[in-house]
Length: 155
Image (cartoon, rainbow, N blue to C red; front, side):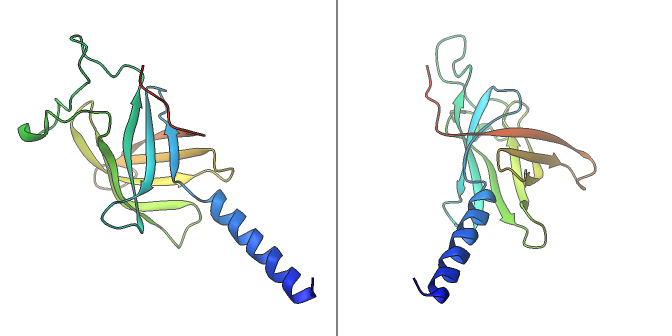
């Protein structure tokens, strides 16, 4: 292989590796281990990242029905199933900071509240700090999610 081709091949390989290490798309286990969230490009804008719940450790209510979004402020949305619910949206890659996504929102179905959000991917790509806050990020809470190789299935 000519020298120029080798340099190009190595450069492309390194660029692909750097991109893979900084990719938040995939499956993540919540800090408590009670939910798995899939992060993927948003349906309406693939430059942004969204996330939905794909698995819960206790997905059913006392009647054996899938849990519903009963704590939502909007009564018309309270019948939505929690599994499949979009809880992260509009997270934009922050080009000024490595491994940071910002400007999005996160919804907590346990209390029905929506918060501003930002995400920071660890250097090894295996954990993700997701910070939800009201107003400024200093007044918020960070939850650390752990990357998982594949989707879990409901029991």
